[in-house]
Image (cartoon, rainbow, N blue to C red; front, side, top):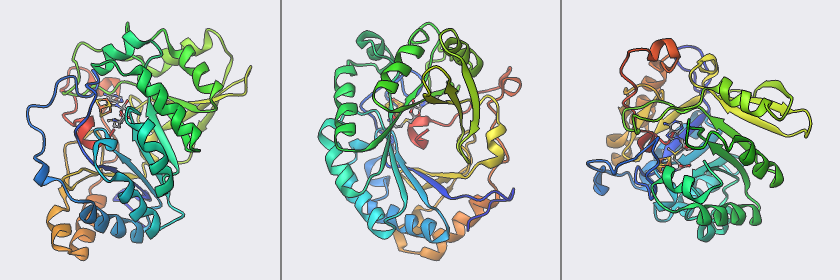
Length: 325
Ligand code: SAM
Ligand code: SF4
């Protein structure tokens, strides 16, 4: 079992397999970054897998592949198969913008992927294009349909933004309910890479929108998940709200993040990280395990996205496209 310096059990590893992306979402990567990590600095899937084995042997039982856009990385299905073959019962999931899913979904499913989280911020082509920086919606819809068709379990992530897509909360929720997909509304997290003019909707404003039409009942958090669940009493549909501007979920935080170049990150908010690159390139299993132990020991107690803390302070410099959200 992996235990951090605050006594929390860590059993969830999120791996960003690339920072590159085919979208330019305003809240994440509105401009192409000045410099990408050079391709030669990326860890190979074999190197990443060496760390995955260390993590699984230590007690990790849930892995999510993310990015950037993970489907841009060639042979992702082979990496999924490697992990799945090593621990077939593992909860193995992927977060994607769905653009490349029509072609990839079946291969991912065959490789052993169980679940997908798909980002969908609008049902209107012009609004989706404004957020993603290109005309994406028709292809995203095809990707969602294909994922459902091949039997993958799908959750939808939406980031509600004031004056952009805040009028679509109920419509996207209905779209998800009709397809038996759970939706999670994510509060916009301020960061130095986003379009600084953006204003996210606060969790309570998101709930107020839902309450304009429905009666909701608070259900609570799902284990260590940052998502707080609500039930719509009229329809029986459950949705989630991820509200990092409160940090009550930090006390149950069970996750660490690994970037494509091998930085092991204990908390999404902070810049701190330690590299496992040297160890895995040498095949040094003990070295990688030692870095993991150090990162766990120093994992911060909580993030700093609370409103009081953001007031007048510099925002997080962490790039979501690097850490994978
Ligand atoms: N490209 C994939 C996608 O968009 O689903 C995976 C990577 S993306 C960084 C992972 C998640 O982070 C997405 O659901 C996205 O909406 C979310 N995200 C990115 N920047 C964010 C921000 N500033 N605030 C809240 N969520 C953000
Ligand atoms: Fe790309 Fe995902 Fe970031 Fe959008 S949120 S720019 S799709 S990594």
